[in-house]
Image (tube, rainbow, N blue to C red; front, top):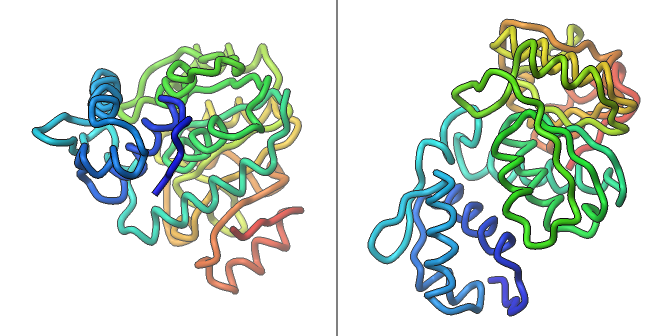
Length: 263
């Protein structure tokens, strides 16, 4: 339960989305109790989220949509994986300082990172460069607009990331001091991969303008395979993963990356 009578609308809405990711459905009466607000307030929040295509209203509550739960954008194979991704996201927030200029790539874990970041004091005065439309939507929904967002433009993927030459050109004209990316697969000792070659080139463009690249990858990524390599281990300063990563994979990764954080 939240027991927070001063929670702002964006925080309530992010709480609703987190509940949906875990349970697939929510009831207004339960949310009103947990958030300590009126059912009318909850219904307004649900209406806003439906307007963004993030859920579907039903009698007495809401259910998930393909936008929220589609793989690989917001899906998790089970509740444990959701918890792993959230632990990684929270650990990543600790690496942000107020006033930072950061890049945020597309993906489920980076989206969770953005949610927790925008709820925290660490977001004060930050500038965000992103190719993720869901991340940009989070910024637009903030009551406290102390966050500036720059969206790259480009070709939209079915998971609402912007990629390709236009995105790469915009990214190449800018600079970020910290970059937060996800990956479809982590291959030791090769590096980080994604299924889409255009997305791969856009991720590489992000890395080229970053002072410090931070990869957010849950333990399942080490057992995945994928098509296109967008970064080697030499390109990355920090990896944040979860405690379910097998010890052998963890030790191999520590030999290749200066800083490995286990959340």
